[in-house]
Length: 208
Ligand code: URA
Image 1 (cartoon, rainbow, N blue to C red):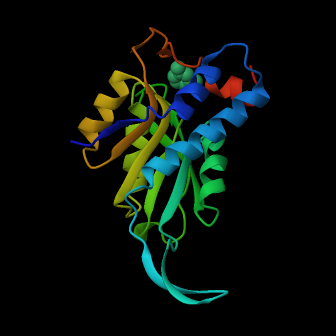
Image 2 (cartoon, protein in one colour):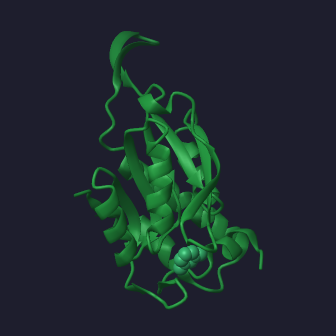
C-alpha cells in the first residue's frame, strides 16, 4: 500500500489556510500555490539518493553530494501547471512534462489528449502534480498513462486530498506515494472537495 504523507509543517498549514479563503486574489492564490508546492517538493525529495562528488572551495578540495538529473515533473493539465513553477524553483534543472485527459462523454473513461514526459524519464523519479486529488479518477489514469511510458518511480503531489481520491490511487497504484498539504473531509455531489479550495482552475487563472 502506498503511503499518504499529510504535511503538517506550520508554514504549509498557514499558507493553505490563506489559500482556502474565498477572498484571496488570483495573484495571491497563484503565489501561494507555488510556495506550497515548493514546500511539498522539499518533503517529497527527502529520500533522494545523491551522487558523490568533489568540490573545490577557496581553501581546498572536499567531498560533496549532488543531485544530477534525478527528478522529472509531469503536470496534469491544466491546474498542475500552477504547481510546477514552485517545484522548478527548488530543482531548476528538472524537466517538465505535461499530460492532459478528458472524460469520454459516452463511456466516461479518461482519454489522454496530450502527453509529453521528460527526456530520460525512465531513469528519473517523476513527481506528478495536480492540486486537487478528488475522486482519483484523473490521477489514477494519468499515473497509468505515465507508467505506460516506462516510468517506474512516481510520487503524486497535491495540495488537498479527499478520502475517495486517496483510496483510489492507493488501490490502483500501491507503489505511488501521495504527498498532500491537507486531507479534507469529503466530496460534494458535484465533485468538489469540502471544505477544499473551490474551483482551482478559475482561482488560479481568473477564468469562468
Ligand atoms: N477540482 C477543483 O478545482 N476543485 C475541487 O474541489 C475538486 C476538483
